[in-house]
Length: 311
Image (cartoon, rainbow, N blue to C red):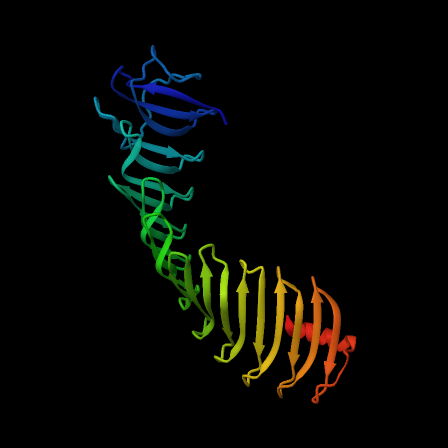
C-alpha cells in the first residue's frame, strides 16, 4: 500500500514531527525528523496537508537535538511499536516496545551503550525469552527460553562470538528435564532424558551438531538398548542392539541411513541366527544358522521378520 506524509511544526534546522498515513489517509506511524521543510525536502513523494493536528499522545521532539520518540501503528490503528531514535548515532536508545495487533506486549528491549537487554512475550502474556544481545543483534551471556504455558524450555549461555557455550539444559513442556549438554570448543557431550526422568541416550556431538563416536541408548527401565558408533557426520555408523537381558541382539551397518554392509542377528540364547549382506539397501545374501553354526539360505519370510525387528 502506498504511503503519504503530512508535515507539521516544520522548522528548518530543527527536529520536526512527521505523521505518516496510508493511501486511505489512516494514521500509519509517527516519525521525528531533522532539517525537513516544505521548501527543502530530501524525500520524494506526494504530501497531503491537513488542517490542525491529530491527537497523538506522548509525541515529543527536541529543538536542536538529534533524538526523538516514534510510534508505529497497525492498519487497524492499534499501536505496533514505540521507540526512541538517536539520529546522530543512527541507533535506538532507551526503551523499545513492540505489540501484537491484539494490543498485548510482544517484546521490549533496553538499549545501552554496549548491549541490549531483551524480553519477548507470547500473546497470552507469558514470557517467551530473555537475554542480552550486542548492537549487531548477537546473543551473549545467559539466555532463557520458555513454552507458551510459562514453563522453561531451555537455558544456557553464549560466548562473545555468539556461540553456545558451557552448560545448556532443555526441558519438556511439562517442566521435566529433556537434555543436558556440556558445550566445548569443538565437541559437546549430551545426555537426553525420557519425560519420566530416566536417561534415554548419551554421546558426543561435533561443532556442527552431528553425532560423533559412540552413542548409548537405554529403555525407560534403564536397560541398555543399543550402542551406535557414528563416523563422517552421521553418514556411516554401526548400530549394536541388546536384549533386555543384556545379551547381544544385532549388529547393523548403515551408510547415509541405508542398510549397507553385513547385518548379524543373534538368538537371545547367544548364538548367531541370521547373517544378511546389504549393498545400498538391497540384499545380496541372507543366511540362517542353527545352534551348531550350520548355515542354510534364509527363508524370505524370516528375512522380512528380521527387517521389521531392526527398524
